[in-house]
Amino acid sequence: MRKPRMRKGTGASASDEQIEHAASATDRTSIPTDLLRTFVAICELGSFTKAAHMFGLTQPAVSSHMRRLESMIGADLLQKSLAGVTLTDSGAEVLRYARRILSINDQIVSSVGLQPILQLIRIGIPNLYAPSKLARIISECGRAADPSRIQVRCDHSSGLLRGVRAGYLDLVFALGSEEDMKDALTMWPEPVVWVRAPDFVLQADGLVPLVSSPNLLPPDRIAMAALEKANRRYEVVFTAFDTLARRAAAEAGLGYFPIPQEPAIGMEPLVIEKPGVLPDLGHVVMGIVAREDLDTKSLAPLIATFKAVLTTEKEVHPR
View 1: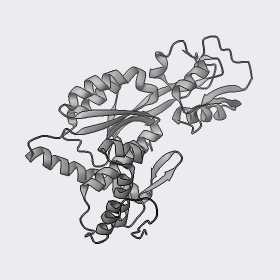
View 2 (view 1 turned 180 degrees about the vertical axis):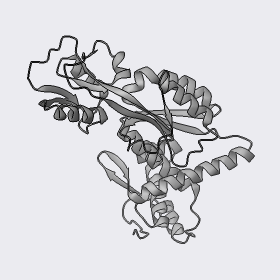
View 3 (view 1 turned 180 degrees about the horizontal axis):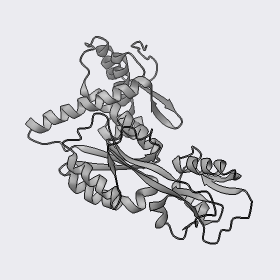
């Protein structure tokens, strides 16, 4: 457990020290919403500096907010690293509650105040689907969300699922296994295919060259499992987190890029390998997952539009 602390000799202003001293005497049952709002902003932006710019504060002031909040709660909420900030287990739990508290606070102000506050709805989609889906999500989902605003984040499915379950995102479209989609609002199967450069030729009985992601996204895992089951030897010849980099490697003729069929159809000049050359890859499970405490009833028009954009001409299975 974390004990309230005072930092001396670190350049903190007198006002910051006074604030922290006052916090030590504050009733722990009453957490100021400005502290929670700062915490949520740091989580969503991934940076103390960006949160400071957002609120027009200095970085020491933002750090002071976090020290006060952690002292009042009695636990570390964030961990700093070279990659940015990450949530502790306690931080993930507090983030979920903080978003609820701020949402209720803003609803009260909006319903009785003179100036309504527009709700921001955070939507996530996989990088691979941005070229084909992003424009319609912005236009059609934007209209369905009115008068609220939407914010779209692109990431890998694993990151999107972590984000929605930690409260960073409100609604995400992702792909994975049935276990990954256990709490999905709706889900459906999508074929996975082998994609290659048009002039690439696989050598008979040679190693199957794979273009992969370092953290093995679902299509990568499916491809490796299929090759192992068929006793086909393979090697990973290129890895990158970035989708465009993997696509460029496939276009350069380095090897096969396993991806869902829908984005593969419009990925010229890459072509889908004909049946029989490599093992069939079966399907990946795709779905729409909502934040645990999201008011899906009031957002029903938006969710229905999101489903329509993603599942046109597909058979979907409501949960």
